[in-house]
Image (cartoon, rainbow, N blue to C red; front, top):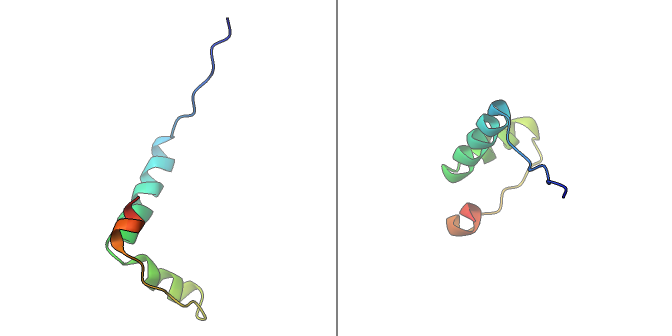
Length: 52
């Protein structure tokens, strides 16, 4: 019998993901994209769609 190895988050990877998710839910991530990419256009989406 072969055991399948499951994927795991590294502590650093989980921390970075949580930072991005928090900025998305607080509607702060678009400001970063405006700074990094001046031509960025933001379209609003229902927050429930973002949380899924």
